[in-house]
Length: 117
Length: 114
Image (cartoon, rainbow over all chains, first blue to last red; front, side, top):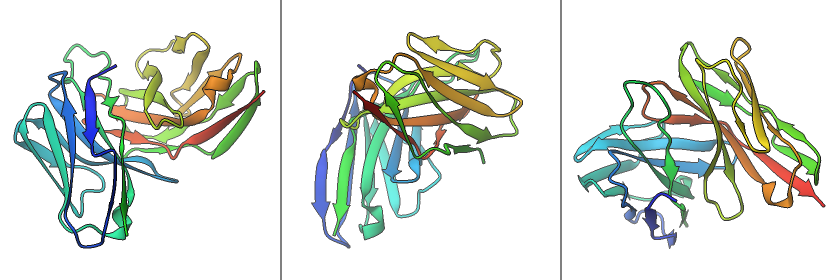
């Protein structure tokens, strides 16, 4: 299994409070991703990173920010949590795209269940 | 943007029987990847099978196989000899050849009856 951990695994917080989720990898992969999973929507990309200090927005980025100061860590921050951000959050990693083609599989962490009351 | 549709929210199958999960997608690209992921109650996302769009041959992994119909933009998953451990949510996903993210369908919950 790919070495990806997420912390915390569960969190309950109140509306308006800041929340930071951490993703840590031991695979030295260049790309890291944050997804959220909601019933009826599958997984949707929030933000991703293609290197240290290099990040970009995904499909549902509003209300979220990210930071990557080291290859191994990718942080997701909810500056002021809202009830609509109650979800399960997944981190994923992958290697760089291959010029010769071939698979570029994403490996997923165990997920973090966040409840915003 | 590419979209992925799984039209079956729930499916059930008898143990040892065969079941097919449907997936369709919308894209204007000619080269891309398609994946099926399994998510058991543990919540871990597990890659089941993958297909490169430029390969005509359908991918197979043990009891799992796909029926890839590029013109119809269809990518169904067939599970043969179903086992109790196959019970899970199954997600179909699309990724562009050079893309940095995957587009997921809403998922199909598979129940396996003993």
